[in-house]
Length: 288
Image (cartoon, rainbow, N blue to C red; front, side, top):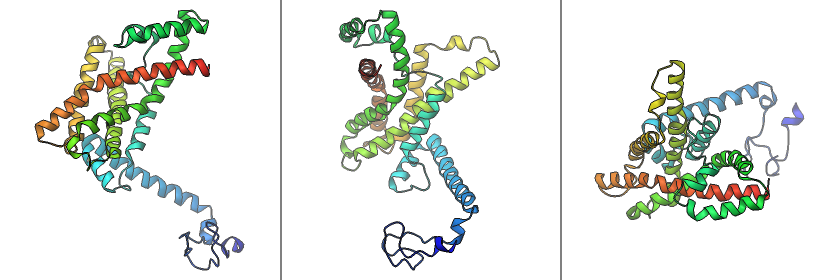
């Protein structure tokens, strides 16, 4: 044990003589005999778990109830109190990847060909791609739909970037005080709310209640239109509380900007779907 403790050179930077509790060059702590006992594993696990648990609970509570306070305090330097917005976004996407109650971002080949604003412009390209693949339409559609379902979740990272561009444009008078990184952090939180609450928790809870309690008529209330309207309404309310002190102008101007931002939700999603189309076709050409 002594040879593990009595070292003359700093193991981190190589400074010597290393005869103090901390390296004077890099600050590395000198290990003691306690650091080589099995109990240190338990202490590190407990310390790490408690720190994560406190940060997670603080973040989750603020994320749901006071999203603006969460992002503002985090950007002001409260890094130990909260998890970063990027970590919240990753956790939300991981949950959505496992429990996708509403597969909003998946776009089938039939939808790409016939039901989107740009379909008439991309149909010829898609048809020529199918002809060059050597598969008939049905075979190609099966492969495409399986692959695009996976890639659609991987490309969710594009959504906060697209929203960040929109909020950067809407926030003209405060652009110098709000760097683009701040816009990204706010929109990571908005996107996390979208995929975690609106696409997983709320519809999943609704489906669970209707299935477990066999309440007739609950599923009949769900349609693509009613679902879209409900999601946009809740997203607008959450976005107002998230951005209310972020956008410049009076209360009414801020509310108008939030509504305008969420009105841009549909074209931004369509942009994401167009990117998904080319990524899926490119993947099929080069990797399948």
